[in-house]
Length: 503
Image 1 (spheres, rainbow, N blue to C red):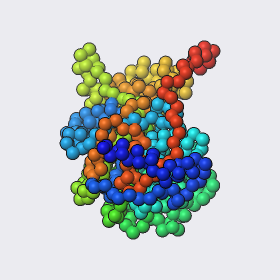
Image 2 (spheres, one colour):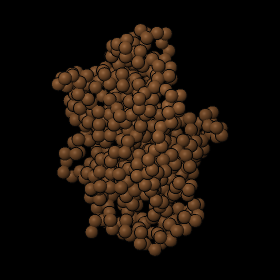
Image 3 (cartoon, rainbow, N blue to C red):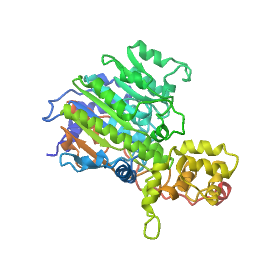
């Protein structure tokens, strides 16, 4: 019998779990300590270490572009593709839709892994009715597992929060930060010092001080990370918001404070957990998503390479600790970029793609420079300095209204200055996007190590929650709610008056 199907069936039929689910439907405040329905014997080949790797917003297009870029610039393919070629790597495709939409956001996608429930976009481990779900890290923490989060976004962002937090709105970063302390996260590394500092928080709470009083090592710089003690819990917040884009860190035109790379944070986290008997670590390359939202091919490609370097760190760890299960996936695709054929016989494609190596700033930083220019000539000069692109006067004229927030695109999802600049730069690099939004793609999943035989075929994202609990010998199921149907009523005819007004 397929162990995955057997496990899910056992969850449904186990009387204790059924009783718990019913009780939780009436009492959202059920204590996780009373919610566990007990342990069962571990299956053979069960991992004692779990590394869940997420490259946020990765589509097959950005994966292909990054691999082509890596071969062109670094002379080798991504580690991702080396894994694909290995017979021991298990592969699957996963459906990541949310409860209320065929297109998920990062929070609903992460919470499907983190609670086993598809929830509405925008929430964190709460149902559409506001019922609270018990998160994976709560359950594993009670069972003695160490729990870590590593990301290049704000540490309070949707993907890390989905494994441990419970709030009604994913934007409630300050509340999520407080829950990390309440739920005693063992390790959290990323950005968002603003959600922990008394001078930045709305409630003026000195959350950094609270972490220190509970004997956390609070890390604020790469040197802090390198010397962090192994006998304490860690909170590392290395930037006020998200960790700066790699392209901005390396381009030489943007002033950014030193921050640790994703690979460095991952290596440090694994060093901290090396001697722990059992742990689970989520590692997120979060800014691929942000780059694609901004139609920023250069930013997304560099963030993908940074994530690939973190994969290498995890594989090195697995060599020394073969009882480690590694899963690599994405929570959704964003904006579906692709390298387009340029020229009558696509003969201009390769030269255009090479131009990606000339880009020295992210789209957001470029726009900051362009908005302060006095005329189009100066704007064109700055664009060329940032990207190597000598844009024509006509291109700059097309872009100008969007810089003044007066542009209008034929497809509403392109109605932003970032998407407008992305389309201009597509003439330079050949890489164009479908919008600035998430898409409904099914996503790839790779798995290595003990337990990877469960990763096969077409998965539902909620299944991973069950697998991870099974690895710990736990049985639990949160309350479920029905999905909003994929086929809904047709949209009403566009309001002509509204169209003319916005046009």
